Length: 101
Image (cartoon, rainbow, N blue to C red; front, side, top):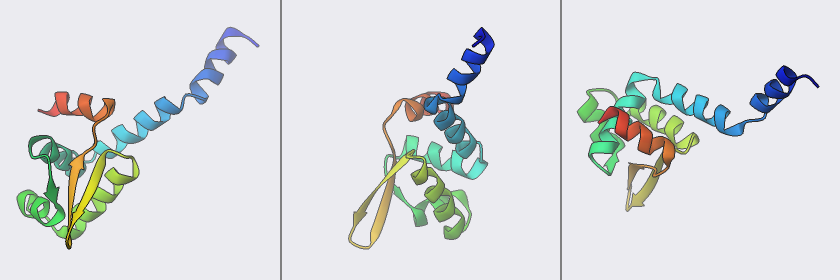
């Protein structure tokens, strides 16, 4: 196997690169990036509060938060009937926080 073929194989199998690309794609959306910013500055918010602050619908925020949850960028905590979201603590969100704040 040539050097270039080996490198191509390594890149193809790098799960970290794929995960990072997916995460960057998700936060590349303006609404999701704004949600990440809110959660950087305010450790816990619910969907209704985020929708009001962002001047958008609960539906838009819910959809955006779902994407962030899927890629493990946010976590949730339920208190009675309200679900609170926070930015998950990992290297990606630490870098994101450093970048946007």
